[in-house]
Image 1 (cartoon, rainbow, N blue to C red):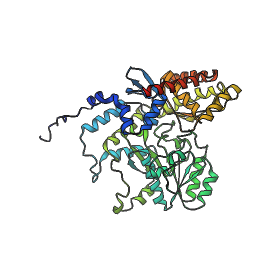
Image 2: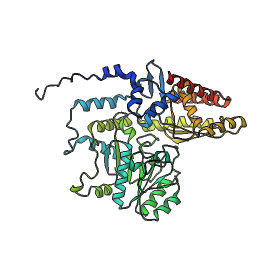
Image 3: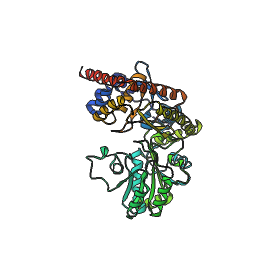
Image 4: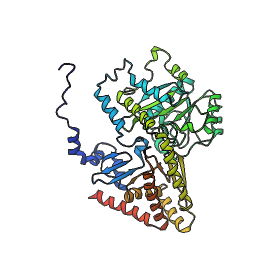
Length: 470
């Protein structure tokens, strides 16, 4: 074959035919070869749907039923499913047949994506590309330790920064850490507590504080002025501020990065991922200051001292570039702010109407709905029974009801929390707001009338248990 001939497709592999033949085995395959507890959980709560396709903020099952997705793959599907611009970019990069991942060359796409990303953070200078949010965090931890020459990282209680060993060492939830010790000797401090930060910094061995501007598990934002004050304290003690924007970044909270909501805050390192992928190709990015990168990559001998085999691959870079283009062309950040404000305000207005609804908080399209102990004796009795069974059970009941009654996909924000987190596609509009608020109001009406919600939840569990035995 000459160089200008188009190769014929290989014989013997037809992806569509494979999925048609064996797609119905999806849950059996999961149970046999992957994590069986996922299978068990989905069957138990009746979330074992078969989605045939996705478009924008919606999923469609084999019967053509439409589901509103308010989870968006935990924030990955920020532009909605199968956005045509990102999809086209991936087709193009494959058709170009680039000489990708040569390792001993410099390709243009990583530099172009870095240039675009840094335009949103003019105080930062360089980017390292990995493959995920936890890799972005691992990079920041390594760079902070090396640049400062100090060993210890501070993190906040209830924080979530990833599940690989380094990022797990700064994970504030014991449920994720249990059984994986020994971890790195890092230290948890209360979220938003400047006195605790100052106390630890005075020990002189702190390399950095890593913090989510809005915590992914609890959806609590840092107190006003906290990031700026923390930054000043850290720099006073020659330590760094790391902003973990893996979930909050790329427009989620109504700013490109969530830390930008507080004037004057300029983190030394910023971690990004999830939304940067366009919902297609895993990508992580660690943005940092020139002097930090200069210390890590201080000579040719250290050129590969930190690298990632699939980092900066052409497909991921193309997806990132296309995503940033869509964010600008479709005014995604402003839409997240506008629609998020509308959704949050309508939900917050319900707190006076429903005593089980404790608080609605968040920013942009990252919203936490927290339930709490009701005032009336009748409701307190049911609430106490659920709390005795398992903290977080009421929130899970609401999640199940939203799915089974209204075909709306949500999930609790964390284990043993009475909080539902909404992180939908940043492209949703008032139609989706109306759908969610109407459905949520229906569920809370039922919850406040008596035991209907609990009865429905019980019926779902019984039905699923019977189906699993058959």
